Amino acid sequence: MTTNLEATVLVAAANDRRAETIREALHGKHQLRMAASAREALSVANQLPRPDVIVLDASLCDIDSHTACRELKANFLTADIAVIMVADAADADQAFADGAADVVTDPADAHALRARVGAHARLSQSGSRIKQLGALLQAGSGGRDLAQVHEATILALAALAEHKEDNVHNHLLRTQHYVAALAKELRFNPRFSPELTDENITLMFKAAPLHDIGKVGVPDAILLKPGKLTAEEFNVMKQHTVFGRDAIASVERALGASNTFLRYAREITHAHQEKWDGSGYPQGLAGDAIPVAARLMAVADVYDALISRRRYRPAFTHETAVELIRQGSDEHFDPEVVDAMLAVEEKFRAIATRFRDPD
Image (cartoon, rainbow, N blue to C red):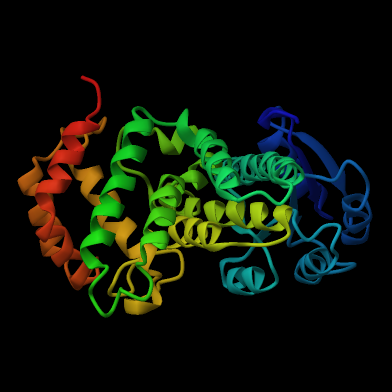
């Protein structure tokens, strides 16, 4: 497996000046393969080794970039390759509809292009590792209970992002115990009882540590920035939910099937930043359209973020964190999940103390 510096990026641009601009932005960061037309790019993309990321510029004219993107996504040999389109802002919605993983607004800013390509290169390479893991797990399972597959997948996936931030291990332990405490409090609530069986609560507990696995695809310069993110940087950060979903989906594809554990992992990674009132991301889901596991994770994750020290602020007290979550009821959070948190807040306090970060 290559390192991120050795990721292969195929750049398709018919305009020489634009091609040189993109080349300069990515030079020294990746192995570049250049194509002067869409047809050439489609041909190169089918050759081994296939690129990790494809950048399609709007200057393509033999086949326009939108058509080229659709053809790449329709071909099973290239469908999994992340396509980044350099296009006018007005074309962004169409680009995503065509299957593009990301759009850099024309004229392309070198910093934005490097960040987007780097993020998708990381995701591609991490996905390859996960596929290999899935194949090994599948070969070794031999029809045995999938519990061992669950445990190994959790450890492997969580390890991908663990090096990115300080004290991640304790954060993972705390949040999975918060999720379990909320689920146990809500299991007799008629709105939640069909989902929150004892078996499913155990699977949610195991899946919870994967909630931020998609951060492996976020550049360190953004993830570890001590101050406030710019709008452009925040847009990159928001993609961690999509990266996480895609990572879990790659495990499902490698295993040739899904199961309840992987479903919870996918729902948690993709939807834990959604908000009850529809103002969250990445899909703007609202109310019960947000999966139950993700609604529990949202409260657990925000509480833990509030009580944890950050580079740019001290930790809030338990009392302040609880009050802020209470204020977010019916806006950020499902109000009944907030009620459950208020009912078990002393359990939250005990969990935070048990797994507190080192000084």
